[in-house]
Image 1: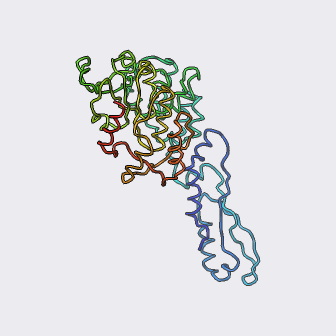
Image 2: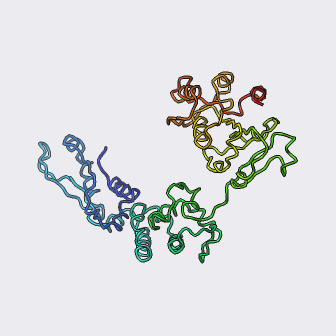
Image 3: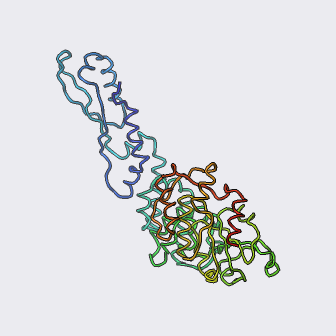
Length: 389
């Protein structure tokens, strides 16, 4: 039987709870109750065929606490006049909370709302939008408000997170909760103190004006004759130091795979950079790269071409290396599957690159084809290098 039972009515209230609507009403003041719940009862035929079951169902509903059942009179051709439940109502917020057993949580949320209204009223809206997330953070909520207070008093402070001195809060706490803090600080801080272009938890420091660990560029010198001019073969420098380097080389290779980076053959007047996916901002100040022949080696898939296209936004003279149709077809047995393709247009690809990219994007060679760079035979790599060395 699909008749609505008391447990079904409770589940409807629990759904409102998990959607955050019951607690949100405490913030917005919008009344959620009285509220009519969905109620499905027996058909006329079922009343005649299962009369005793119907009577038991009616008693079960009428015995449900905190729920008002409204009935309607019906006249059955066999059973005569009867009163059957037609509507189920929860009349008050307190009744709903009692039915789903959430009084403790409501009390705790009310306390969080009160302290937020007193200390940072601008954050009330966030509590209304994410009440269950607020409850999950309840044990640390005072710490979040302390951090908010500090950031308001120290806009774009220009120090490391490690230097933030708030009683009872260490920098690892801030780092562990950067995602939640972004949501709160974006509501609280003046817009002119936020760098909205710095998105994601990984750029928290940049977004709010903290100092951050400078990204390092890792490279290897490929010409043995030049090693004496450097403190080693595998070197990592900050972007600023790399920009000042201006080494006596004519060719630069960039690869996204660490093993390829480490195994890359020796070549005169050359170095190889370990790539950083889509992040090439650190390379931008190194204008000496404009006098070098730069070769980018990425996977043959839509994202590989996406990275190439983005790199050319910084250095338009970059050449692709082993990202061609001949290489792709030569290693068909090693093709893999690209989980999520990028479909955007790429205006900086050459005509042949664009044709291959379109074939991959439109799945003309097969569905979501990719050839990872480390699957290309090493002899093939050496032969390709011989033509440009």
